[in-house]
Image (cartoon, rainbow over the protein chains, first blue to last red):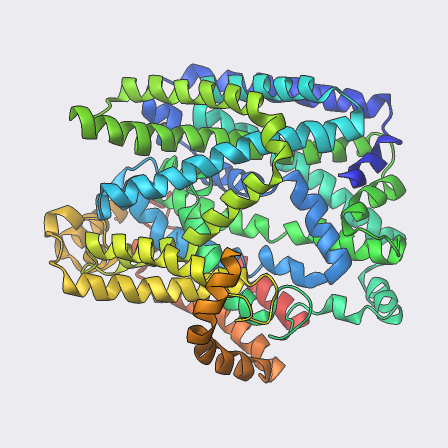
Length: 520
Length: 87
């Protein structure tokens, strides 16, 4: 990314000192938590001891990468405030639904992963299919993020050797994720979020100060003929990306809920909560914090349109603003904020990938072929083995995967095919007791097939990249298929779905009495 | 190549379904878009208040009003309502 190179001209000795101090501090903090890991529960779900504030902060920082900082600001520069929809309507309602529908069921069932929950509710095939696609996706993301950090950020800004940076990252994140598991990842994330917010708010405040406030910015944008940049809901047939129909139905109702309820990296934090209340409130707190992200990335992007107009690439907006507005020391802090955003995504992907590979792929296949289930100690050993193996392999493959953009695009597209169908079977699995294992399997497999066909049939929707529309219709299709096939197949026995279905928990007298007793 | 083949086979099947929907949505009166969006936020808040308090606040560390997650939801969502009214 050429845009980031612009910052390099202005980093001073104090900035580089801040960067080095940050790396040492993150490493020390992360490895400190290794002393608390005794078994698989400690490693994968932090011994179920996480407070709500740590969960919320970790969810936000895991979700936001350094490229989001640059890319979202760039999109705001090019297309306007509509890009903020992804952090507003694309987060808060979904996180409320996730907090109050999905999280309690995951938490109560004591699972480590979403595919594991699907396996209990449906069958092993659904678990392995879902686990495999997420396992491969997370591993690929890991390699890609290592290379992006080394190549696009550290090399362009500090000039450090790319391979040295990759292995430095492997060492820092690998050691603390290997020793401390989810506790280390979450606590490091808490610090990283504070750094990100300090850097982001500094950029926002200084850009508003420079322009003369919000009103002055709106007046200047309107005077320059950019009034559409202040419109958040765009018509269905707009030439710009993100029409309101796709935003509300495809993003707000399908993709966002699928992401917040089915993304292992997000949900794993709530599974480590010390209580069900902390799991729910952590998700809600995360949604509240996430509301501020557009203020720190999209608004500076709009401000850049006033302060540095005429940029050919939107991605150059943030580096240009950093160079223009931030003094020495704050520039280093802003660089650390971008770095923190990347590190937190790397450690989350590593921890979640090892969890999925241990629980849903290795554990399930071992059970299938030997009939033996992993005990707590074995799962810890296997989990650490995968953590070590993945981070080393990701380091080796990083330059190659980083150069093969088509691989990342292919895997990301493949994952997007699963979002609508996965939400359909998750929603029906939790909310409708009549949903059967065959209904779930058919909904997932046929839904992915339908998504593939719809995505590749050109001219059906106004947008050139109709992923928002495809997500909505694939969700609707999978919902219908799952219902129809479930009605045509025998219902699941009560003992199998006990405690896994919303209506059962809400209406079952015995379960209600237990809940009431615990509350009083 | 694959995309062309899929388009040739499936476009005639799907277009009669999606084309009228696109035409209808393209002529949609834009203030309704804002209303639909706000309804998603307000509807979510109302839905949360329709849930049993015991269910929402299970395991809460205390009974004070600030532990009520229904209130958390409203406080977290109200700024969004203001944002979508403003823009």
